[in-house]
Image (cartoon, rainbow, N blue to C red; front, top):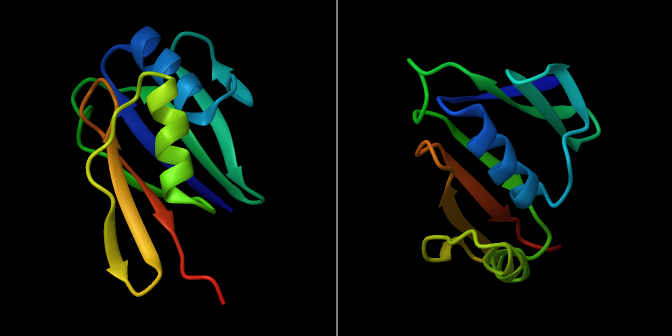
Amino acid sequence: MLFAGIPVAHFTAASAWYERFFGRPPDVIPSPGREVMWRVAETGWIYVIVDPERAGNALATVSVPDVEERVAELAACGISSGPIEEQAPGAWKVEVEDPDGNRIGLAQLPSG
């Protein structure tokens, strides 16, 4: 099982942003006002936690079936992204930043 932590300084703003990013409320709220969790794979979780000293330094990547489609969905929710870049033949990646400056990548793996 994997738990990837994203430290934030301002919980309310970050929690709202991640709800828009994931398109749903958190799956688990272990500590109201301090920590929330989203299941992103069968055994993979991302948790957002108040930790002002570390805020803005996280880097995580989530696999998506179609990067362009996901970028359009995020734009409709008010979340902008950087440019979509080809990492290898058929593999695409884009990054977005949360309100604290944490970078979240979206990766589309080659089909086949």
